[in-house]
Amino acid sequence: MSTSTLCFLSTQKSQTAIKFNFDFSFESLAHGGYADSFIVSTEQGFSPLGAASTFLQTDLGISYDGEIRESARWNQDKNSAVSLLVYPSQRPKSILRGIVLAPGENCLSYARFAGNSYFRPKPHRDYYYSVSYEAISFLCKTLGARNIAISHLSASGKFHEHMAACHVEALGHFCIEFPDLAPESFTFCGCCISREQLLGAQDLVSSGIQSSHRFIKSSTSSRGLAKVITIDWSKH
Image 1 (spheres, rainbow, N blue to C red):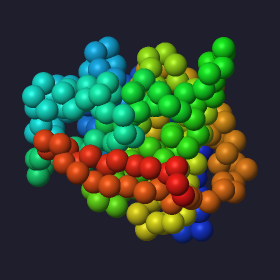
Image 2 (cartoon, helix red, strand yellow):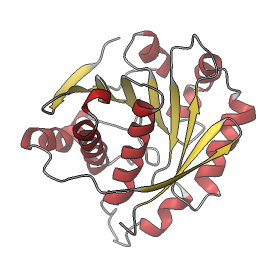
Image 3 (cartoon, rainbow, N blue to C red):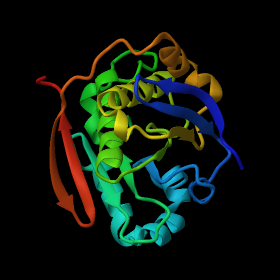
Image 4 (spheres, rainbow, N blue to C red):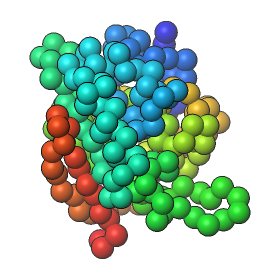
């Protein structure tokens, strides 16, 4: 198994390889040294989170059925706030530093941001950007992540190229602001993503990220073993 490099996101003081691997398991990415942390959708069942349940439980030392599954369901179906659930590893010798269960368009919190177009609307930029930035920030600043992998933060089969662009824009702003903490790699992985859907993100890197980061208000609480990071960008 190997990953392919899409492009390099370079700032004056850092460089992050943006990669992809669509024929993967979380376990093989981790054991291959391609990922020390994951940003994964709360979607369960036949999904990246569901497929990785045994590995995540074993490596992180956190019960999947007793802890992760219930929290993922809560964040998807019951929590109207935009919240990320962060699970730091509970094992000192784990491969992963931790995972982020990130919300997306299939979550209750996205309903007020969804468009009303007859055709499938473009994903809400501020929602996906803010979720991405806060996930990357916590993994790098708090858990010391160096190689982040991200699955589709959408309903199954509905990944959109603009989601990838939002992820990369957020990554670029983080790397500019905190170059010493910039990850070495950022890998798109798993099902529902195609190479063509990453071209917009690649163009964004090639043309240079011209926008600047906007302040995001956040608060942190606990839910079991998870850190719950609730975010709000609407008033800033």
